[in-house]
Image (tube, rainbow, N blue to C red; front, side, top):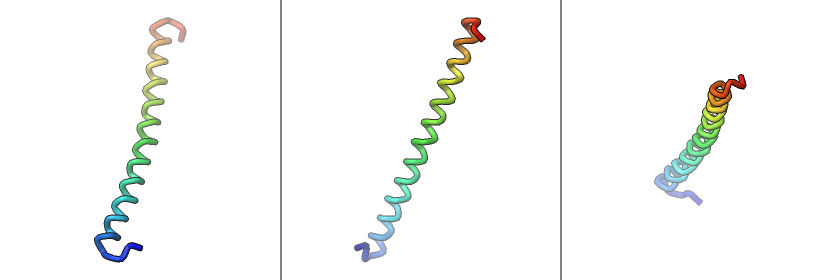
Length: 50
């Protein structure tokens, strides 16, 4: 399958990149939820609903 060192290195690089990108998406999604909740709290505070 992966016979040469370059093929092994390329495969390892692709797997590592996939893991990093997947982790990054989850982190950004969580940050987006936090920002949205902060915006909702600010909006309700401005409306006087507290």
